[in-house]
Amino acid sequence: LRRSREAVGLADLANTDGLTGLHNRRKFDADIDEHRLRGDAPVAMLMVDVDRFKNFNDVHGHSTGDEVLRLVAEALANSIRRHDVAYRYGGEEFCALLPGTYPEEAQHVAERIRTAIEDIDLPVDAHLTASVGLASGASSQLDVLIEHADAALYSAKAAGRNRVVSA
View 1 (cartoon, one colour):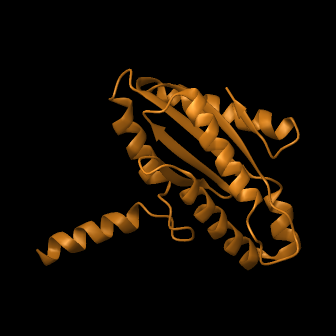
View 2 (cartoon, rainbow, N blue to C red):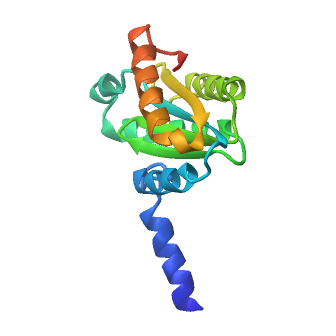
């Protein structure tokens, strides 16, 4: 029983981002593989990127940047629904997998995330925003949805940041 608990604990560590406490990229990849098998079930993918974060780190330092990433992760986790899953995708980029979600509902979740990040009370005199890319479709097409959500994220950045763009 003790070894079983230790194995579960190690698996949790292997699938958790050490800075933010969200699921990490390894867990994201495993979950995508699992959800892809759900065929035509609806799903939405959100890609979230903190706007101008490199500049924020340059001005306020990396330890403040790390604290802000933890705050962003908390805002993201508190903005999704109980059955959605949030991940730290890498650097200042996050994503959320929204199973059983159609485009209109995904748009509401994405906007709630964007607003929650904008409303974070920062530990320094600065303002934080995020851009969100959204794609919806069938679970079997998750690889394509990830690419579309990522392209929509770049479109949100190109359109002036601090917005949600749907693919």
